[in-house]
Length: 470
Image (cartoon, rainbow, N blue to C red; front, side, top):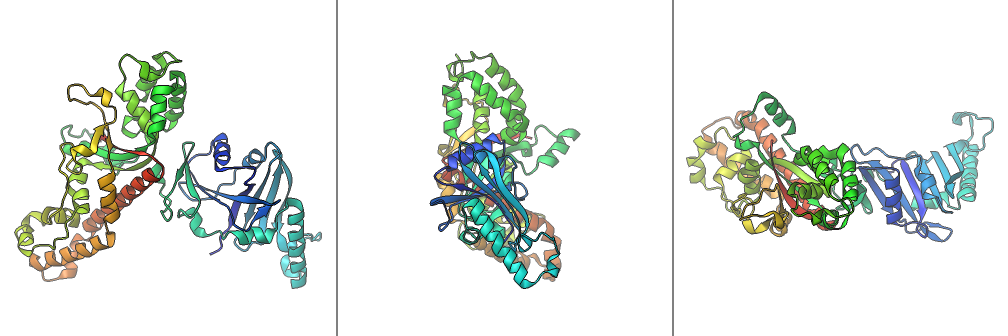
């Protein structure tokens, strides 16, 4: 379906993805879903053309920043900004040369040149066609681009704002993140988020039990290890301080559970000799190092309780192919009676997980301290652990969500058969809400894990577990 068009057009001999990125940074644009394509047949004075579409990452609405045209066209460059409705009759364009607006027009192309401003319904079909033809000539004379070729070169789809098509990127904290083609626009992936944030906050206000194991949470983040290492070992402390000050307004969404440490970290960095890297300190500060790693993060999988990952999510992900044993399920009926479908399956069906010491879901060999230099006498006080994602990535890629759904139905049918209930619909209805919530929680977590691992691989990011308490 043809969609409204809001795009900038740039010559490829005057721009590159890097200059586009720098211009967006200069305008302080962030959390942007953008698409940069090079329409095959489109030429501007003989040069190929970039077509740039910008959308808000959170809501998918188009962005047409006023200052971007002049910025793109600085230093004797040219830029076209074009907006058109789905019918391509109502539109606006503006051409920029050397940092200034050179020409432009807005209106209905079928009324172009009508000095009497008559309503369209009072004009003949021949007059409408003549106005469109006159506009096309005017557009080409003013811009050097053929309007028909420009629109025919690249179909603008409604999906462009919702799904990563060819050339789609995310602009996150001054970085382009290469996306997986076909993935949906998922803004939460680019900020720290926890599934139980609201309810945990309520529990804290009411005075939750400090020893409750459900207070232990873990999330997965993907961060740029080169950026973190440069900030630690190469950049002078004064530059790192300024970087962290820029993080401060967004610290909850970037640093997550370590956001409360930022004032302390800023004080440590500010007290360091300003021209020296932080790594030159006599004793490295682990909290500072972890904050730098999280500040270099671009992708976050939803945080959840450690018990959920160990007892439900990864066991379900690691179910063996064995069919449910009727006798085993029969013996467990009383135990699982009040459980949701995910909990019941992981209690009854055989599964395979590494059963590591830190988490059952990961072997000890897959995890390593983020800062090995902070290990003292086999003790490590850090919150971040590097994860070798090789096994997990294979597990996720081989997992078939449709096969799981079929296994859920098989398990559910056998459970009902053994339950002694006579009315299947009544039995299902009594369980429907909790079962749907449990399956939705699993599927959402799985999709976020899948996206996080793929984005980490495609953008050369390191993967880490973040442990924290709520």
